[in-house]
Length: 281
Ligand code: PAF
Image 1 (spheres, rainbow, N blue to C red):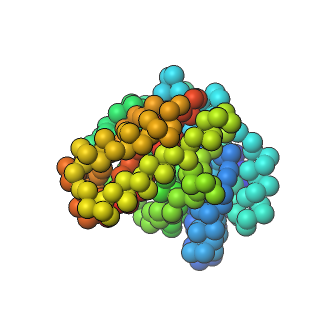
Image 2: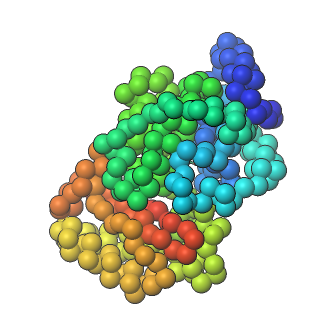
């Protein structure tokens, strides 16, 4: 396995692979790998002949009061996992390799970026869309793999890639959960034991809503109330940021649950902000 810090070295090696007819799969990450990242690598290995992963805690997607400095990092462990799981190349730039000091060119998908997570994280998706565009230019993959836990991010990247005519197929991969249902996330490391014990109630709430929908309840206002009540009982340490019912492709809010509808939720819990989503119909 190769490990490079500099974009030019990555570009040269990947170009030689492409020249030899390889199909390049790309797994962008911010490191601190868990089973969700490994599932993305597996998906890439299943469809590609070379797998490139990036590990870069991208400063431009963090707000001024967010956790950039505290974001969990363990590069040695990530590299060992990448090697063991058959990654061919890991790109690990520092901020200086990715951004000029006067960086002032941005990729924005404003309509999809301002709602849901974007409402409480202004500028976040501009940073994501910009770094992913840069990574696509550096790596030039045929396919790129993203987790469906970050559903809004996936929709924004699909839209960005389509509208900018990026020759990359965007592949969404199912959420990977702990045994108790909590969606895996590097930020789960922030949870105290007490918070961790309550955290699975976020997904349990989405499953509860699913059962209500199956029983015939489709009014979004009543379902939102039911979700809030569930969290007040089972996750009292948390503070709900949003619970919304949307069309999965457009993220347009629904007033009644009709096919297709995705429930999306974000919740502050101690130092963490958990997100999750679940297809209702
Ligand atoms: O999902 C993430 O880990 C990040 O947002 C990404 C896509 C690697 C961009 O920094």
